[in-house]
Amino acid sequence: MAANTGKLVGKTIFITGASRGIGKAIALKAARDGANIVIAAKTAEPHPKLPGTIYTAAKEVEAAGGKCLPCVVDIRYEESVVKAVEETVKKFGGIDILVNNASAISLTGTLETPMKKYDLMNGINARGTYMCSRVCLPYLKKGNNPHILNLSPPLNLNPLWFKGHVAYTMAKYGMSMCVLGMAEEFKADGVAVNALWPRTAILTAAMEMLGGGDGVATQCRKADIMSDAAYVMLCKDSKSYTGNFAIDDEVLAEAGVKDIDQYSCVPGSQLLPDFFLDGKTPESLHDQMAQQGLKPKFAASPSGGAGSPAQTFQMIESMLGKDLVDSVNGIFQFKLTGAHEGSWYLDLKTGEGSVGEGEAPDGSQCTMTLDSDDFNKMFVGQLNATNAFMSGKLKIKGDMGMAMKLEKLMSRTRAKL
View 1 (tube, rainbow, N blue to C red):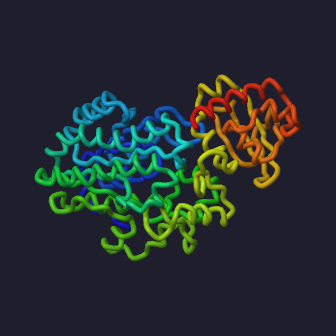
View 2 (tube, rainbow, N blue to C red):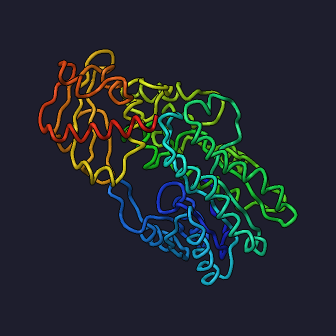
View 3 (tube, helix red, strand yellow):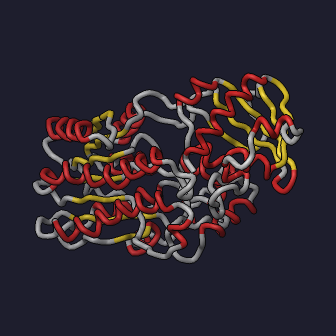
């Protein structure tokens, strides 16, 4: 692995979204040099499904040898970012490095992506990155070997990387466009602006969610490969190393790391290439995961109108939230027959809601049995649920009142199409 050299000792590093995953891994790597780390993230209280808070991450940073300032920050809001930067400067005297790691993802097609989800992704990825850079730059210009590092992909304009999730690609490429523009804009000031992207899938909580379970680990590398690559880049001379769109294993190979397989969660296994790099299509990535027995939570190719149940549930998932859970307060089981036979559940009782393939973990109050094509038609408005029930196409077992509440969700879904 890339060895710590001590070059980041005393440097102040502001990292967004660093309570878990790659952001935390970068924080810990720099902390081993004795850096000052600012954990700028939203998670102050434990999340029911995701590990870690800014405070647990801060303890790990200090145990690794760094100093830490945990800040509750929502990078969608300017006042939140400004406050955190002011607290950073007050505590540590300035800012030397900004790592724009925070990101939101929804691999959904245009018709399956409501504006609320679009705004979330663009607000965090593109706008949040731009804003954090803008607020930190006056201090970075005074910093010691100052760097901005965005965790974003090369600007690959192959339409394959747009067609299935145009909103996410726009948001992620917004981060990369910040690199392209700011690297040139602040070159004379000696502020390096670079991007780093992984060659393969990285095992994080987000990847486990997208991959449909713990089994995705066999096709992933550890977050250490990204933290090691980031460390190498942040130690480079900011005046001469800027405007680069780097890939993690290439950075490490150039730095003399010869054993890249050490970063694999399961050494020797077939790895899943990440998005936005030529060589694999979104469909082939989906198929590779499915062949390993996983259930990826993104569609191989999104549809317009009625598609597969997976696409319909993906659309439903994008609309979930606490308000919907509070209004329905129930769990539904769907037994589908026909071309896409299988079982799915919709949990509108727990947390902010969830969907999944298989049996509902906590049981259901209402079970609906119908043909998979009719299921899709109901949710896109091509088949009335009441008429389907009266004609025998839809069989309902359990709480009929709960079934009536689901009709409201169908109306809400149709309004998004």
